[in-house]
Image 1 (cartoon, one colour):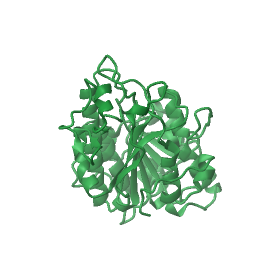
Image 2 (cartoon, one colour; image 1 turned 90 degrees about the vertical axis):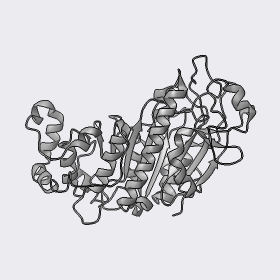
Image 3 (tube, rainbow, N blue to C red; image 1 turned 45 degrees about the vertical axis):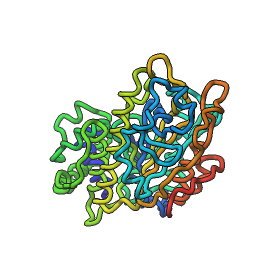
Image 4 (cartoon, rainbow, N blue to C red; image 1 turned 180 degrees about the horizontal axis):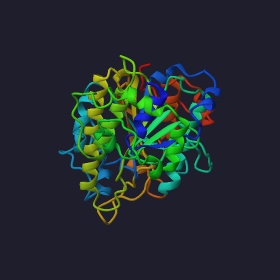
Length: 401
């Protein structure tokens, strides 16, 4: 996909462009060296608000689970059993074909030392891959792309869908934010809005720099709106985000889909379940599972399943003990999912031991979250993970690369 064509497509679909580095001469000045692994796509799914891990990956064989969660604990007969001690929330049924095909990995006990339980600070730690007492400005992906730029033919470093927050792409990455994916999905023509200069002067300035952007949009017009995937995507905002992501991957100038971006970040909101958690989390986990299943189907259609790695993340988990409002408060460790055609499926990390909570009633760290990033940076992309993360973290053995 041509860079300017890609920008045209997004500008005409109500996108917000975040271009800390000008795409023209400045991008070219970076050089031509790039990591050979960027043909491997990364899709991040942020579970915004902090998902409750114990009701997602359930330690049903531990009696303490039901003692701590007398009201909100998932009944054993309702849970989807994975092995003799671990089960999934019943709303995650759509993930079971992936689990049986061993293309879904679950990493348990993910957190970091001296965890911060503020939404804002903790997601900053995750986004920048910092220590809890360290303040870094650039996102961990921004640092990766600074060390090894994506190839010149890529339209951008990454795309953020469903959120205006750039997260791990903040402060330096060539990233594009599509806040309204439904508008992009519904768009059938790539026409420049007549009132663009009046409605968004900042965006108009960027488009003026790209003086041939309208011609580029004309070239893409036959492609956009004609990509017909057989996959049926779930309804709602998250389903629209996934459909938009798949359309981004399907769009391009070449007969075979080109590698337009190295990373796509999606957001599923609503996991801050302080009150009435059971119903709310059931809906969210159902959206997550059905969305991931549809994503797998679309990636297979596009021929990109084996070169895509999907990973969930969140700012923290929830406390093991339920609160008095049938919910859970901010906690520490939680499980996360990896999905892909080259994923070695199974359980990884450290399962929760509820008899060994810390002094604050939280789970101890089992896996440092930066081990997840080291797995992406090293085995998946072939980058110098210790240099990017400023410390060596052992990658997880969950990839066939």
